[in-house]
Length: 480
Image (cartoon, rainbow, N blue to C red; front, side, top):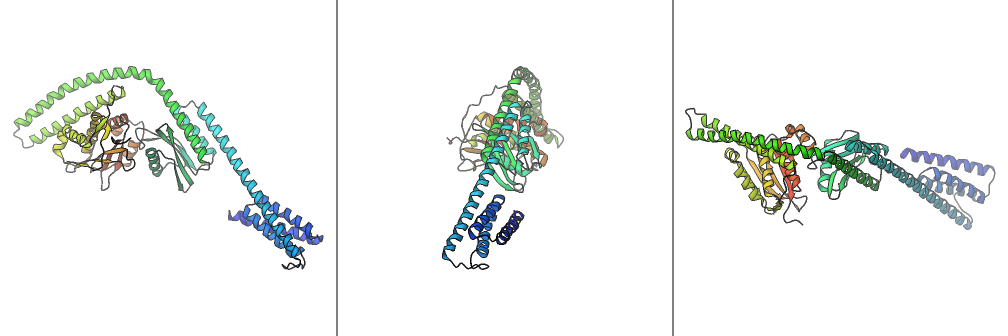
């Protein structure tokens, strides 16, 4: 910008010098010289910014006075009437300069608006014509991002929670962990976010349908208006919703048939497994009562009983997940105190309670959760089991309940451990849609699915001092 201003000042000096030399050479009278200087000012103002035009106006007035008003070659004005002429010339030059600047700005705004409309039309046609599913929607949006000259950007969709992210399309500089955290915040608060960055201005627009946020449109180094971004976000959200609806409709018949078959198979497998598990449980109890000559016998029996209980819980979780996916589970929402849930969880995990300390903490302002009690208990039990497996033998597990500091209409139920925390690969696995159960664990998928049924979510965070916080976010019973 400084170089452009210097070039404008240099052009002003050359233009005024040429006009002055020509006027002096042909002995122009003051009136003719004034018109010539005014033309020179308009020429400079039409090519440069308002500041350069203003400098040209003042410089032209000074040259006009110095070379064409008696006494010449001085800035003295003999005739008082000449002051009026000089003042009128300066005001005319400044006014013309201002009008030209306004006209140029309006022309630039019109050009930008035309480009935005053309880009919006192009992306609208792309979104309507795409046949590539959700991925095709993302590619159409990235073409628009490239067309507007942004540094980078893309479309990120959410899974069970805003931390559960899938970038369906991205262009430009790679997506950073910082952007993933900002995107998660946009999903939680459902708010448009604009932040300065090394690219200029980064914006994250939520992709909302009604009160639901499907994902986020990210544009780094944005060069378009808020209205254009909102329009593209709305088009993208409806495009994603349309593709998901078409995909669900295409698979609904196959899912209906496969769910019936899977439920039958799971019931049969569960029955066949539960019978030997019951026998093994009874026999381990008998061994524990009789004891043994070997000093390590009680410890071995305890390990067998713990693993039997764990296997039984996994079978129950598998059956519960199958019932949920088959649409056989219908939540019965009611106010549920966190203390009741935590007490029931301890009773259901006798082996865990016997092997480590489980501490309960309920904040004074913690409201009851508006949730199905049986489903909430299943969530808490699965998360406590995960924390138990991740924690050292002597470390305690904490169960905590508090009102959400982000939204007074929500309540948090948290399971805190002192394990090794989450590795980068585990954090990405918890955020990414579509990984197999082996990448996360059956308990995690079940907890997320049950939370979604209750208008909630489950997220994981690093705990200060080491360990992990598993947080269930649910509606509060005292909310509207």
